[in-house]
Image (cartoon, rainbow, N blue to C red; front, side, top):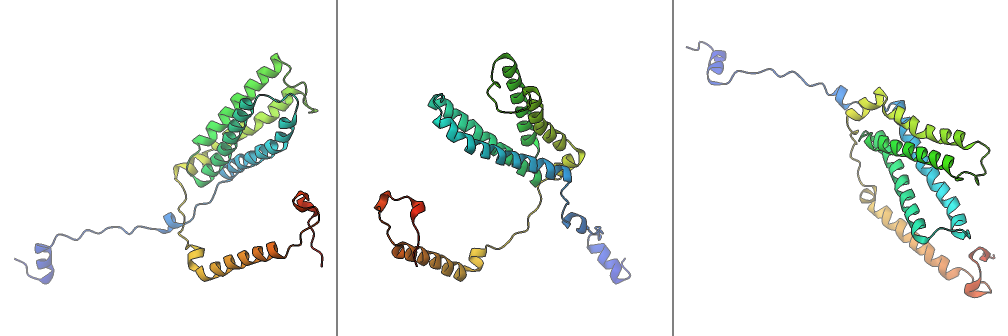
Length: 221
């Protein structure tokens, strides 16, 4: 028989289970980005920027050349180059975010295969004869192969493996600045529209009409 209030509580109520407190300071603290992950991601992004710059520089010369390849070959080459640029930038962003390193490793392996194919073609044919490079083709290929090899080494580093295994970083929700400052955004948009309308109305028409180049348009005080 229960002889106290505590005994009655223990008789009719399920026993109290002590749950250890969960420490949230370790899980809530922001993770520090490893240097290997940052370097691998930056290599992928910078490679994408370099490919884009090279494509924009050489596209004009390719299209204006007398020995231009057929149109379907140019279109296929541009499509493959665009996919290469997107995959390079996406793989670099994915490993920095912690989403995964499989795409980065796949792109690096494909680049190594491409370098190997170019090396075989350069040895068997006169592929590199017209290049203005001062380095021999073998040294140039080794220099190019250093980029995917570096990405593979950085992506397989233990710190990069642990970073990806921990999963993507949690992002704090931020309020929409347009919704938070709707009045300011409305006045800014209206001001830009009025400025463009005033520029179109007040810009003097130069002699020559529509045939005048855009660089010859000046504002006279």
